[in-house]
Image 1: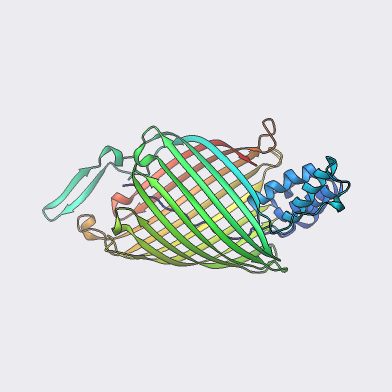
Image 2: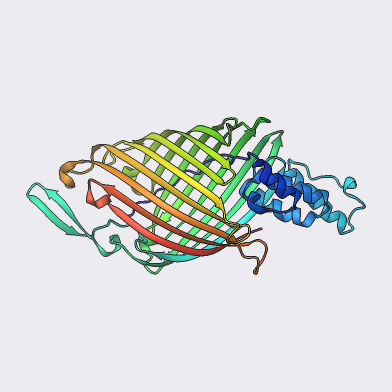
Length: 408
């Protein structure tokens, strides 16, 4: 049985607390150094490049900022100034003052493409064991799963195309639209392959003191198993408070609607709350988010309603000692769900199902300067283990991926 989880895309602005002496020293010395992961500092650095009339370097730097951190204050204005400076140097205008700066009401659009290949020992996220026990009235019976529902180990290729557009519609208020297409191909097909799209639109209001309040609407489609479609609609509300030391707390609510074509028993509606904190320190970026909620079954879903909880921790560290402008990302997440009714009288004597899952991941990202300025290499490793009191829902997987990412 294929189990797919659509992860909520959290709409929030990453922290932009200055790393004080280290970043100021880098600004004076005209060096990116370890501050290259701080979007606010990158805007300041681009402003210093504009002041030195190094407009092309400033524009290239800000394109990356707008792609990854489109809500960063001042990024759009500095980008427009860099473009105006390039035009001036090309002779299109006499001086930058005579060039009308692009109005913030215009869309700023960025795109990115990632292609990677790798190996997984469980491409279709199948149960750990090929045989399950049925508890029939006449006694337990061992059933062997069909080949397409057993673990399938092998190689695969994945691609992801992302487009992001941001528009400032008022002072401190930004409108963002994001679209994503993704695809996986393997030697097995069936439940090991999938295709899909994610669409998101959001509004975020940022105050002068750093507080942010916003909301987002999303729609996702996932196709797997050849002809199975999973549709998801979501509403996310977020508020980020003022900074405290190196950290800023966040809170919000999530509302999710899910439907599978031809399988109305799996339709559901989720409502939950989240709280988190993100910290920008001199040695890296850290975030932790905890969420909990209730998932209502729209029909007579096996197991009935569910209680859900999740904890996710992320750390990002610059690795300038290895490769300039490279970074390492590590993450861990723990998820727990509990049914409120018996899942099936034929599985573990009608037990009420629980599922606990833990996942660990490590990503390394570095520039491919020998190819082009906007190309980066990406290598990833991920381990996931899922336990349950019903063996059909026990699963584990280990995988590794290597690829490239280009932004323009």
